[in-house]
Length: 280
Image 1 (cartoon, helix red, strand yellow):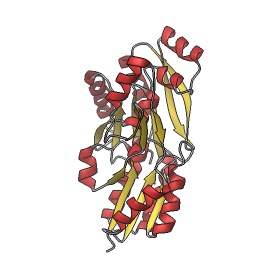
Image 2 (cartoon, one colour):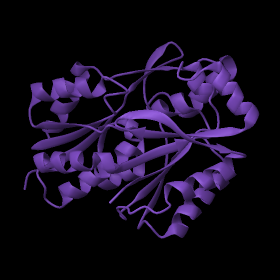
Image 3 (cartoon, rainbow, N blue to C red):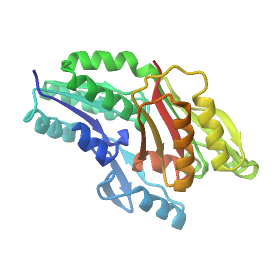
């Protein structure tokens, strides 16, 4: 059986424990922070990004991995394995997938997948690919199977503040101020590889998240394998209340909590949480 490595860029937001458990390899996206080009999660953290924004209102810029860096990375993986299956953040958000594909063509034996998603919307696909590899599937079959289920990934999240989207030019000042004054918590969903605003929730973050969770999981038929509760900096008691609400549905065999990395945190800010899963 061919030795297959499952790989992803760092926006998959998988925890170190999951990366180790499933043997996933990752390559960090670049983040321009404090005048330096840093690597996501390596020499810059979400906490540092939030602190800088609180201090001076500045946000870092994220940068795609270059084709040359991808080529070096893929060659190192191919020295260990017969084939590589690599996942990238949606091509609608970044040229990362394009760059990975260029490098893969130069190296050979690397199958690149445009996740059409972000955060653990990618992570769900990565772990599914790891399951398929463990079951003996070839890299080509894994790519085909994952691309067939990509549209079944349910990725959404609630924002506590629109300040970070406003600072990044993705939301008007009027909308951000209105949301703050009216205590509105918008739900952002990923569909067709893009993000768009969906339902709006009123009230405290804790109450909004419980209503959001109930809405997302009402009347759905799911892949029972796993669900992610992924968040940025947040009160642990609120996160636990969401996990308890997910557990009470009895829909999933495993509930995984992960903390979003720098790429998602820089756009969404603290107090962001999503419940992510795959529809059957």
